Length: 130
Image 1 (spheres, rainbow, N blue to C red):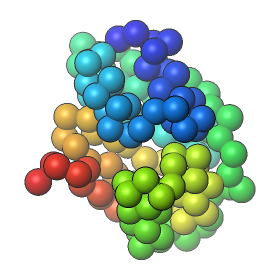
Image 2: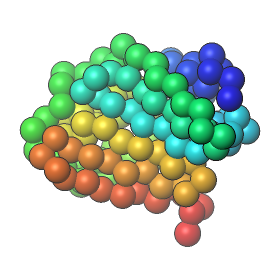
Image 3: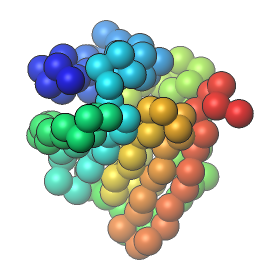
């Protein structure tokens, strides 16, 4: 796993120079099985097939994680991102406002699990996974 390449993907996404499908394709090529974005600690963790992992900090721009979790608000922002009407930088602001404390993207499993501070959770299947 090329750590500088993998670690730079979310930064590129914040700058709107790479799409989510491009990120997933690159991660799969690099052997990444999953990654977790943590809005409470502003860090990302990557896990590869061979057992390698690494953590990187990110300067996420959000107003903190709301105490209550809203799967409906997460679905709304994700639909906008998937349709090209919004970008990851928008999700970084709106996701925590919807109570998303962290989420894990399962590259091979083609799904995302979102977790709230109040124990709320939500699963979203990625396009083409079913």
